[in-house]
Length: 257
Image (cartoon, rainbow, N blue to C red; front, side):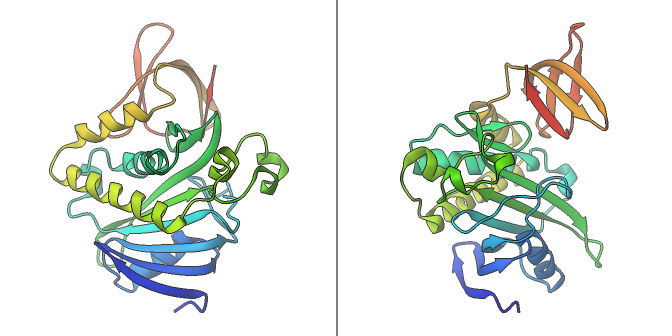
């Protein structure tokens, strides 16, 4: 076991491991998967030295004072058939911030959590097949919580914010963690029961993107249109200038026009 392990505890369906410092909580969760850890194993670090976002060439600034964690999930059915699975972490994060603070947290498609037009958190999902040919997913979530604007490096100082910066109050990180996990667990069970429409409804209520004109960059190509809706798989439905529709499954960057 990593020597930075501080303690572990059981919290409802979750087995949570708390670390002082990790390179990434994603990697530790993957290591736990290889060691046979159960679904809903959670890895939390006070800081990450090599936190990453959806793309491995994008680092995630992860100082002390933030909430940085990953969740190992072993889907009861193939994750490709779990419509709405990609919506789980962003809905849960934005919902929890709203519940515990007076902040109007929203979701910028596909996975940025936004407050006052600045990024306050983000999520990532990595799904893989293990040695036993079983699929598993590791969900990573990062929330900028108890540090001020001046802590951000210069290239993020105008783009990112934190709960402390916005409210002037520190957040109980354990409470924020459990609130996100509980919401995610409920939404996951809704998916298992075939109720992906519930996630779409919640996502649309939290969306910062729907109804806006956007430009999407993918593989050195770009496309412009009106963000009309999000489908059950989490894809963004664009209305193009010629009136036709296009489904966007992923993007490297999205900007508002």
